Image (cartoon, rainbow, N blue to C red; front, side):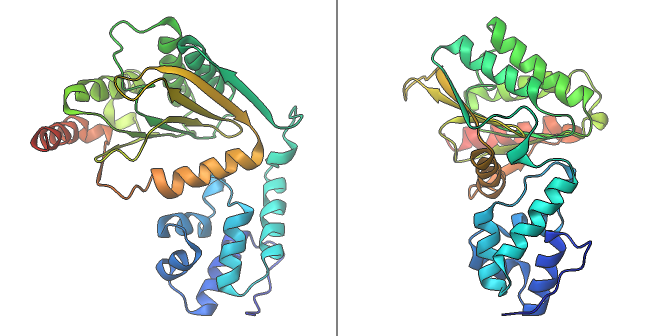
Length: 285
């Protein structure tokens, strides 16, 4: 086993970096062996949770420890100590009394639950979302709660600049105007140069089936009612630290870094990017 003694003030990200370098492994090789994306390993080594990213789960740390030849117990201890020192011990969140599960079985309930999740999300913490139906559906005549959900997201990113909205969307060529419309609404009237905390990616070959909304402490899974022309008719909101952390890890590893082609929708080049997306979608029809 590689001997890498942690310094008193060393975090888990630094210890992993030092152990990897001592083992002679590149980030790409270690990530491949551990079964995670290289970009995710880079965020772990860079302690991305200090700017709102997810904490690495026990499973990820154990996998990394196995290939680094270090103690998984030590990695988990360092993560827990750092999390406690930053005042975010997820399993001991103030007011949290144990795992909670809320089920909604109507369209208004889905959007009301989504709005409530955004409103409860702590300051400076990101919101991760996939947009298949929750945002990329006709909004010319939105329901009250659909409009309130979009407004909450808009206010979140406008009033909390240290928080980031991560958004992965997919659509057909016929509905690309809705993607454009949603992007404009979420900016809340801010000039493109000022919209730095909305990260949007458009995926070709939709890797998504359901809509997800993942906050710091809760995760919402929205369920469509049918395959053809689906509507959102039900959702479950889960308040469970282990589940939410796993969802954050899953999003960062597989949804934000999808296997299919994708395009970054930066606000300073939004129109050009969406024009290219639409042209490609129509060419593929």
